[in-house]
Image 1 (cartoon, rainbow, N blue to C red):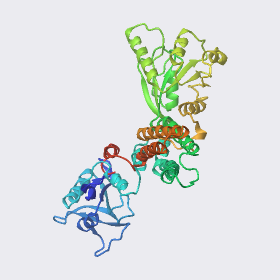
Image 2: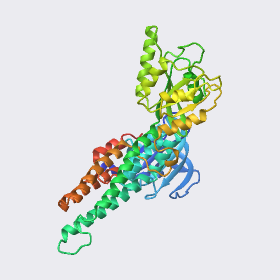
Image 3: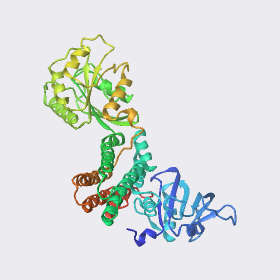
Image 4: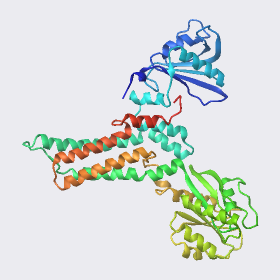
Length: 463
């Protein structure tokens, strides 16, 4: 798994391209310390450099000792570093030319340009982090909402890895029990063979199934929810979009059919990202433009994760409302009774008869009344476990982890059935080993080079 190139000294610019106050060139490997003496001169003559201390001075071109930039330099001696190798960080001004010239000098003096994610890959190969924690690094960088960042941080701190370790511990105990019965059949080994292991396997099976079931909620919190605002014309869909966004994003007029195309934006609700679209009102089309608008509305509705069905409580229901109700009947949806600031002509019970068991919230998009309650309902509808259950639950956010657990669970179920049917203990043990191998893929214990390549290719150069 570790090739000769994995021991090279690598370097890269670790800050984004462009102008900024600070830029960082990072170096890792056996040549990092030597590069300090070649490129850096402190402002204090003869000053000795200690590990894990920051020094102020100048970066110079080793060819002619010309000054490239003033900088802060931090040298960290292994193993107390991100990669568990010697690491050098040069913190200079964040101009593209400055950073490029420093990197050119570093490469010319023996380092090579790092591949995407290679610093984190070395942290994994050197045992500082496991593969699930490595994946959490990129999730942390890409997080777009507070909840997404929270999930990434929990994975980075080893929450998922800890649960995987506990599951493996139970399975290894079961395997040891089976193997003891097989190896010493003449001994009176307590609970020998497959006797009594069904309970342990049942517990592991439920644990793994619970982790798998968390995937939908985890991805929802990480990636966000696609929400379509639908309803007939002039019920206040565009006003609702503007109210959720806190901005005049969509045009609002008293003229029916103002919204002819999809208007889309994003907003954070309780730390969860919503991609919200305001669609054209559904009604009998009168021209080709309206027909196309309604076709797009229906397509957006079909693709959405959640529908906000806006109903004007100052008007009675009609056939157009009935058509909309049929379109969303099998979707996760919330009925929004809008215009509570106007005299009501529609009773809540009338809508409930049509939309039985569907959450319903009364609001005024114009005044803001009821909006906070609607946000809470959106969050609860999007995340099945609800707000109260999220803090104590480990959630999967990677497809790779879900697939590994699913395949591992299948092996555990086969082992459980085999133990119940008193089949050969060797076959039960074989299934448990298969489960251990699949679970080990999550943390990188039994992972292939191909999977490693896919994981670390997602990273940017410099991380």
